[in-house]
Image 1: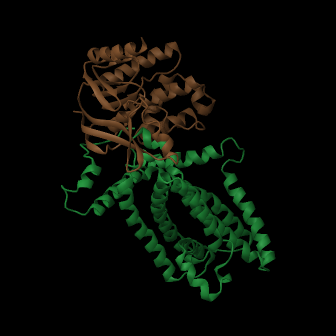
Image 2 (image 1 turned 180 degrees about the vertical axis):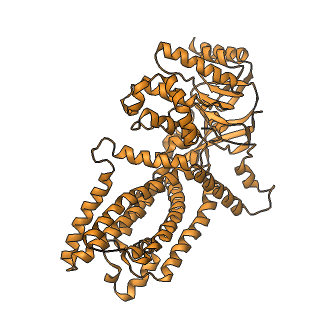
Image 3 (image 1 turned 90 degrees about the vertical axis):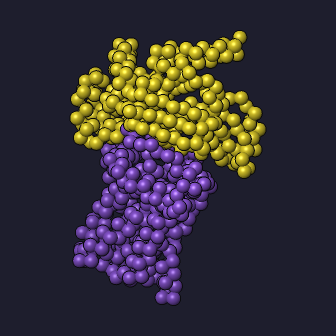
Length: 289
Length: 251
């Protein structure tokens, strides 16, 4: 790869002594982190190709190819949906659309966090062969998970058609919700990936946390199942907030302003923190992979 | 004008392993960089207080034993590693010929891989597509380019990777061992293409164990030993001294 560089002074040694520049160190790190993200965005051709090659490789030479993504989620949604409807005596026509939407959203969220745990080690050859921003592998991972989400959206479409559901006008809120998810994914990716490559035990810890989060987040159960007294606890669970703001537009359910505010705060607050974090560690990560 | 200026650089790798104690027991090993314990973690000093200045026309050979710091130095010049100490200044497009297959996908066809590899070399889709016909011609892969690359033999795969990588003229080339591809006849053609690219490159940095290649390509040599510059000077001088110690050790 051809990398454009002009007299690039070493940021790290300077930042440590901090004598040449009066602005606070944290801000300098945040600037470096922002530069990493911008450079990553400029490499969109690479992460686009990395995203699609990875999916293609996974389903290469199978007759149905990527359709397996849709098929395997579809089968589990159908089976869980019917079982749940019978167990809790909820009409299938109500349970199945809810489950289809929830599970597809959950796969997006948990896929991003789960993949982030190993993303630096899995892509070490990209990081160690050329000068590339850390954001490259993070964005490739987010992009890939959104592609999977699009494949799975087919299930939602089929379920909606079968049960005669239509999209309400407020479905357009899906776009800002997914946008916030992408912002949130960037900082989660940065932080989870960096911590997991440095402390390898966290890889397993994060996987366990995801498993637990699946149970405490209203994915396969409805938020209303929780009694009124405890429902506000869901606002403390960022997974629940995100599942809610993506799901509600599709199912034409109301979303409270507090949920949107929390989602935005988590996304942008986290992004700010993660930029100074990655600005500080981005070059050290290469010694840890 | 291309330029590489390293001023008093030091690169240290922290070694994190649950068995840090086991690592400590091999600290006295002679191979590789110097290891030491710093704040209770084991640290490998891959490069120590290295100065280097390269300008247009310089072809530097990096020689030394395994683990002397050759690859680390290449990564510093490529801008991958930022040294913990010292300053690095690089002006010019750096192209790494270390992994000439980077970005290629065995499931894609030859044509698709030309675009894939091209993008990873910094080209746009349109630029990569524009280069495709000449790459195809040079690779002599013909109808195979419509097949998935996984069906290629290792030699054919390397031919394609070589043809794509050498289709762009960089200002600075960083190489870990000489690259080449194919059978005897193709190898000759590849060597010719590579030398014409190297001739037009402003600065070449090549890590190599081959005396013949170093003598043929380079006009400067740096002998690294345990991360330190043991000697820097003309190829004949530095290589002569290096070979003398290698032969001395063997005798």
